[in-house]
Image (cartoon, rainbow, N blue to C red; front, side, top):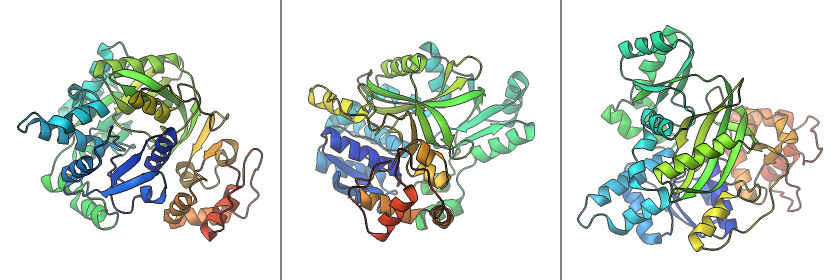
Length: 424
């Protein structure tokens, strides 16, 4: 696994891969929560100033069967590593073969990072998509507004988690958003990330003054939905489809999801995987139109997503499907982690609202089997969240079908973990 940030869902996928039978090794930044799980056999350091060297060194030392990027920047690094290696004498050799085997044909590498190009490709495959266009100047923005009106969405390439997305409803909002999204990262912000967060990913874009490409996309009124898929040579091996119930902010990541069956989402995933000859883990984001339920594909994530670890029945266990494809064995049918279709993601929903009713009414996906990981997560939450948690810990908690989350977390923090603790 290759990670450039310290995202907790990366650890959950590592645990699920190990449970499926894989030997897991990782390259990641120092202080990554991957250090808190027993699922990872060996960890290599990631250097944000020399990312390709970090990745290539880890690849040479591990000689892996497959590479799994855990975030968008890790995917871009692997694409860059492929281009570097293919340009060398001998045509790239084993590293290039490994990257294509892991991610899909190199023909797909550029298009998954270009929102407008990807939307056009999806439209060619008969997938329902909203109109999307690159906006490079204020006149182009005003031309879009005259033709399409409000509201609409502005999105910057190379961003994820809602960071580069703005829903605009007025000319003034649109102009401010375009200027903001087109601007390179501020040097002060890049330095703060480097020194405080130990994250070097903004340093080079800030120093080089690289301006992101911004796209306008028609707004689809409705409910957000997301698909997680794992593929091999263009064939979808397993998939999960969810409606988003809660999320972190208006354009942030999902924190509560509900498992659904949606034939149009499934068909779109199969068409995209086939057209791009995808391999490995990918995510697709949709809008389910309010008055029709039609699924509009709005984005592709060429990496793992935060729900990819969930085992929810036959054809719904992505790590098990990948292991079977790698080994040539049949997929091992495992028990569903829950019969509850609504899932509160940990720590995302708890961080959003420490008193959320979904922490008890939904299946709260806490990795109780890894107490060091849970404790690490709790200790790193902001003072505000810990304050909210401390306050809510003294209030009566619903217990029907679940443990008391506040009591359990107090025990973890106090170091008095009880192995028999019931999973939420």
